[in-house]
Image (cartoon, rainbow, N blue to C red; front, side, top):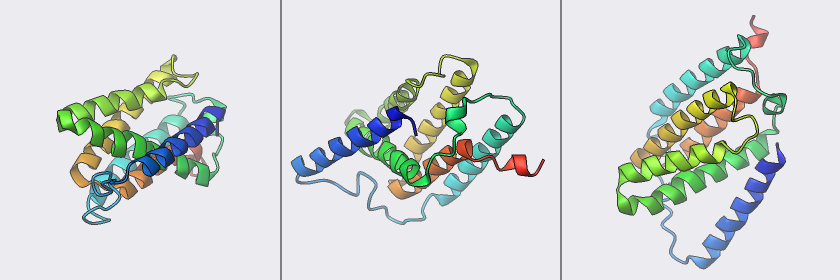
Length: 177
């Protein structure tokens, strides 16, 4: 994991801890921690992740995109799970829930824009690979935001986001070809 990712984990955890202490009445259902059903919306997640996984794996294998080595470095799985969980809480749970007062569509699009801008901080972003990555980040941010608004299931979103990140870190197709 990069130092920026470690800082994100620390700062976000600290902010969430402070918010949890300061806010007495947290609406856990609105934040996606108490979904109607743990498995409602799984078909959409499965389809999205299947398309993204296959696309990313083939794009890397056939050198359509040339990702920096630090991005392909097989991040440890627990810190990776922690960072995607915190991103989902921040960008979907807290941000969308807060922005919904101005309408769900505005909340969705603003959260997607902030999510993409957040990912444009990486050093490789201002290259052709970075623009492809920004497009993928946009697609992911939109899907996860839409899914959050429809199902309010933080757990499925975390699994989906985690699997997308893992698809960059572990090359599956290279062992078949």
